[in-house]
Image 1 (cartoon, one colour):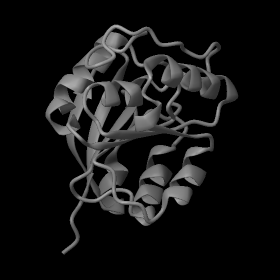
Image 2 (tube, rainbow, N blue to C red):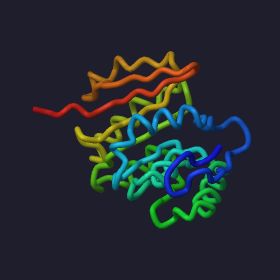
Image 3 (tube, rainbow, N blue to C red):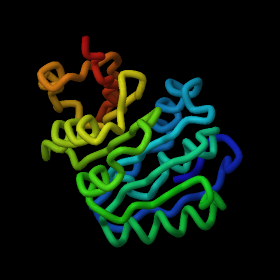
Image 4 (cartoon, one colour):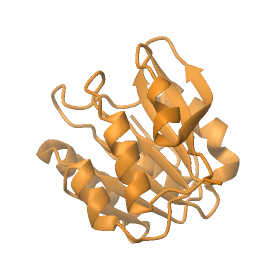
Length: 186
């Protein structure tokens, strides 16, 4: 795994051992960043269930002004810390070593993020409670792009009922990216 583009292009990244994380492959990461490329410049980026930190670090390498990475697995945290140090992106990143819902509650009241990426464990139902927590904490607004990496079997029919909409869906061989936005209230 590596940083694909930007100021840290081609820098290798460490990945946690074991099966607690599923690092996004370089090919899928490249496709994702090609889709959001024009939104990255100077954006505030939130990487939930960060794993190795590869997505948040890629965002900063490509022009995001700041990224918050949230992870609670000890092995993954160690990898993220090493990857931040190796890339030299420490000034532009913050690592929160907590579970996602606790980290969101801790950030409540901060300005909304421009892009939120989440890669929760598949088929465990984290998507809905995380979206509700982001909304309650004011960390997203109708202009925030929320990207959920999910198993292709994941249903997103619940979105409308909680004030979100699916505006783009990109399927890959084994998983997908759902692009979600908060619906503006009248």
